[in-house]
Length: 565
Image (cartoon, rainbow, N blue to C red):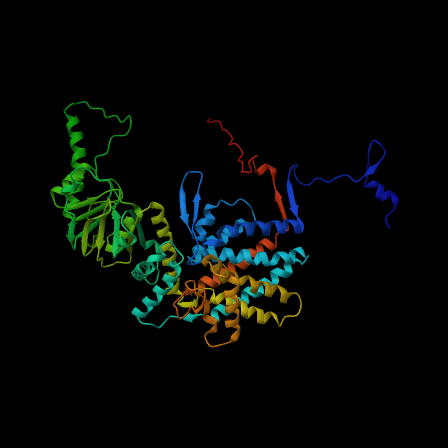
């Protein structure tokens, strides 16, 4: 036992003679600290609130969200990653859901709503355990074990589509793309767009499958079915000068010259000064400028090129010069379009017009300028080195075309993944119900609290078919009971049964071609589990008052002024 004198030494005497324990201040005054069970439950509630805002977008009967930002830009979308980015979430724990939606989007391309809903449901199932005083690390350990078991089961259930001939494989890839597109705004024309997406991916370099080589151009007007795929490059007509209309707009097997230099007279720099002793010399200086530009133009024509593209400006003089000689030119071509032209035609971008040889020029079967809606497009078709293609999308409203582009991006990513990892699982909630059944069976063999936690994980997986039912307007309890009974029966093919969103019954989704790449599910379960474990492992939040202004926005220290002020 400590002596009375040592206890008194740690106390401080007040003016009234009372002895008190002095307060130790570690953090700046005004710092907000939240910790313990209440803090953890608050974080779980915040994540659940975010999930509730996007859960109605899941599936083929999912609804869209209209997001209106402070700049007046309106976005209509049911893509989970797009909505999560636009929501501008400020709660620090809920931001982890934005991160997993983005990682799913970049890693797989589809399943962004699924991963957020799964993470929210895992947290919802954890909440009662946390309120009852269970240590978060016990839950985290069991959830990680359950996620590992679920991912192994997905791999064992996956069916490979390798070893098929090209026609069969293209058909199977279209089925995967149609499953993705069925939940999008363009779902009404999913067969049309699924074929377009598969054709686009198959036209790429099959080793790289670089999505940047698929150009997407948007033209307002017309219907969705007016959209088309160019087996090469298409880009909007660039800014042009007088004389452009006199140039030919159609070529068979033309030679293409790609440049990265200006073909126009340069204006003098500000305050440029030329001193002359003889006034007659002035004309020589002016003539020298003209001779330089004419020399460049002559070398371009002598190279044999019939189409000249440049990243920089091609002026009015050059435009008229080329028109007189039956050559087509386009200046200020966007860099990404020029790169795709060079990939498709085999041309190499030149920074000088001196010594241009035939092997530096590209070619294509047909070049034409075509009217699409109110826009004119330059089309390069039948390119020999074609590892690129361009989708031209049509539609009645700007927001509609934007959402169609996002939808097709998801479908393209899914087809790319299916080409690289040719394994599929049945969709429509079938794989989720089978994983849930498998985990429940496994949990029975576990002694202790782990059984409860793995059961909670299994129950959370049922949120996917349940939400699909809710979004389709069917009785979720009735359909889930049918699915549980079917999956527990052990019949051949019972693991493939999921929700039929058309009738409200259950259906063999594998036979109905409702497929998704196994990578989507594996990534979604792994990312959702990691996000759940991250939120559960936080027991304290410290908010520094110096880092925020009165409105909760970050503030920045004013920049210092140096001697050069």
